[in-house]
Image 1 (cartoon, rainbow, N blue to C red):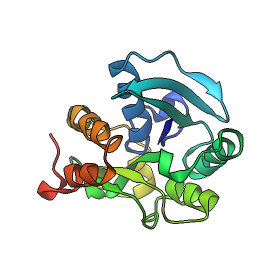
Image 2: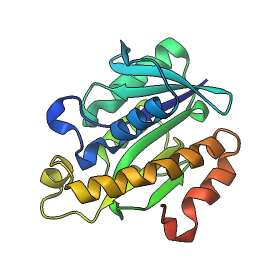
Image 3: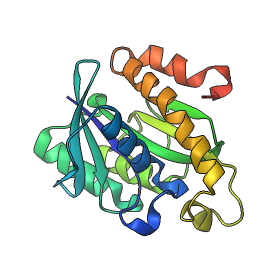
Length: 189
């Protein structure tokens, strides 16, 4: 079983904000693969889907972005989660809107949600899919917590089918998925 952790903040006030791209994308996957409704488990909301014959648990941590590791830790302890069966899906302020980058390891790049998860695993070797939300406008904190303008939200959601295709590749071959996501200037859509 694979675990896809989409990062974001719980609550209606954070819906459609740049910082909730992980949540928004998991909602898209749930709909595309006709998954069951979200249920509470291990400090998160979960739903299980099948992608390319593989069971995938979609996980939205309900611990708020900066404490995402608290939810992940529950899965390590209770479900024997291993980092090779794990993917973090998150926003990246340093990537322009429309760019997506897959990395199997590396620093948090200043992202506090990813940093929290890296601290739980105790290693930088945690796969992550970064979805560009930049460039930031004004104060970073205000930018990531303010809903996207309609045209930017539509542009972002327009990327989701291509990201879904890349994740289908990821489940079969991580190196091929890296080529898919990280070539052609990382421009999707």
